[in-house]
Image 1 (spheres, rainbow, N blue to C red):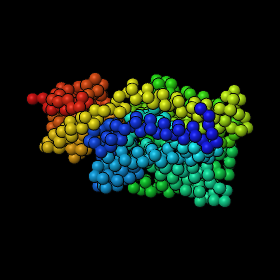
Image 2: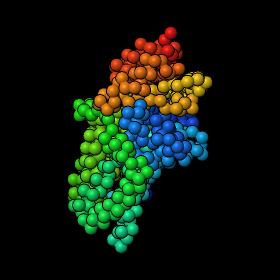
Image 3: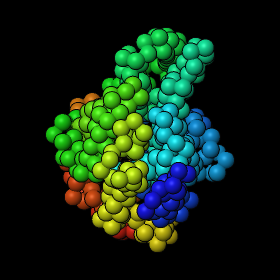
Image 4: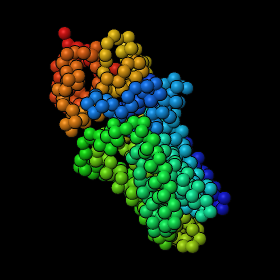
Length: 485
């Protein structure tokens, strides 16, 4: 298939990739307004958004059964939208989708900065969406601030890279501001800022100096404001929260994802090498390096999911752009393809993630569970049962209790981590062990998987099963437990 000078093949591939992505995410998009929890964090984020807008302790004491280990900004943004739509979980899902679109557009803008044409840049934006589905399919359209943080940070990075010498200070203050805002949404999005600084250290030290000074000014101002508002408890929970970590956890996870990444890693290397190690190509290599290292380090922590690979998806997509430019450029064209270098390069650019995303779709039905649509009445019935119940209820899937308009009694994951780490004692007064032993909860809702392996230590789970019995299974996912007589 010959490629004309107007990028006919690229336009065809854009349509094919976008159509495939929309087909893959159709069910998650349709499930946005439904009261079906797709992720443990959805209800957790909704509760803290409720606290942020309606009052309460955003960073509870260390011995509390709930913990907030996220920066504050996402809760206010989600809470504000939730006030309009009437549901913080739906609000967070909408913001996540909009943020993902912003990040994909920014991927195209990064591609333009690398020298790609308009059609190739749009193709990169579409390919990034397919890469996100391949690496983290269950993070599409859920109430989580990951993509929201990246929307701010990638926008700030573009300001940094495109700043003209005559407007350095204004541009760098804006860049630092956007990146700091992204960090106040989620503080783990550090790969891109580190890559910017490393790249500028080698290729534009004046740009780096102005950016560092601007970041210092903006950062100190932001830290002062948030510390005055939330103080030491926020610092403790963000930087020193109890979380078990083991590098042995990261190795199998990275081994799993590398089978979807290696073709694009090869593209990055080929593109960087054939383009003569230029400064812009080196930025992509530095970005990928920081992204992989940061993802590996974070995946060692308990409860960390594949959403930390978002920077990796961006960097690899940009590497694919370098690959197309390297194989089809005017300076060092690949003669073996006899004038069809760009056709072959574009096809090689999209095929790995097109195939991998289909593999994910058919091998991981949990990522697009059609039962989300069929079982919505069961989820709503469970929330209705809890809402009509007098007294306290505890939910592992916090969205269930959120939709029942019940307070958040316990955060199973973070409370379990604190018990494991020794930050709180399992038999502490007013703790979960005492409450289930005294049968203080009218109901406890746990996930089906917790019947085998739960988020809480075994001593707490044994106490739960000694004092509570399963009375109903909801949507083959949630187990409703009532006190034993």
